[in-house]
Image (cartoon, rainbow, N blue to C red; front, side, top):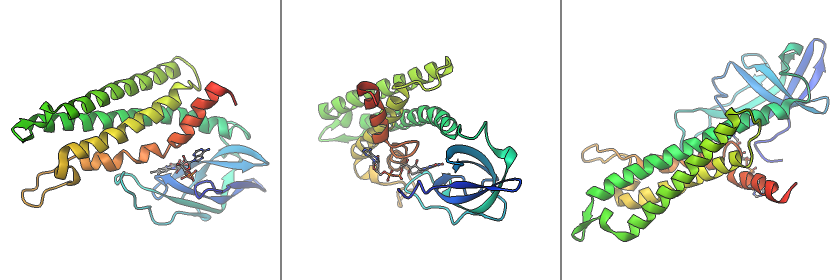
Length: 252
Ligand SMILES: Cc1cc2nc3c(=O)[nH]c(=O)nc-3n(C[C@H](O)[C@H](O)[C@H](O)COP(=O)(O)OP(=O)(O)OC[C@H]3O[C@@H](n4cnc5c(N)ncnc54)[C@H](O)[C@@H]3O)c2cc1C
């Protein structure tokens, strides 16, 4: 069992349920008042609402991460936490459906965040390329980088369109608009990572800096480079997105 999928089980108690298990990398875990928790209840995957400020719920210190420093993540340990019978969401056995619904909206949004990061890295790069001169000409005049920027601009445009397509289908009432949701998530976040890596390279030594000691000048591409990695992993890794696309092509 992977470290982020320890089993979480609800067992019957006189007026509800008791929860035992372990969740990892949970956003806002250290500060949450309530959590929606997917667990096994009488053998069926079920979503329950858990009061996080009770005995039997433990939240260790927050994780230290490569990026996303404005957002806390951490483990949750359930050691007999109480779940009143009324805290079952929808009905027992509907947990996976609820989780997949949230993941669908989440994946479109994460794809969109990738497009935003990629566009920001491209804008920073274009501005730098127009101003940075070496060997008598600007970086913007060098065909190698012109072509690279043309490729990335095309990819960002395609990723943006995929996000809009998935979102429009979802808004029109489709519960699971596939394969576009998986495509939007995987491609939107991949282009963010690719563009961020190019942006750091285009900035040269400055790309590796967040702030210059000499005059306090700040640079953004270092941060975008770090922030672009997480979205390739969370909300379902990009390999899992490709597996979902392949299932649409080859069948289950
Ligand atoms: C910043 C952050 C925030 C998070 N927030 C939350 C949260 O709020 N709630 C929550 O529930 N989870 C959260 N997660 C967990 C996240 O969803 C998982 O980390 C992610 O799904 C990957 O699972 P894993 O870490 O166990 O990696 P693993 O499942 O161990 O995967 C390791 C590698 O193996 C690859 N792999 C796995 N299966 C296959 C396959 N069949 N074919 C090819 N490659 C494969 C994966 O793609 C990955 O590259 C968060 C993670 C991070 C980093």
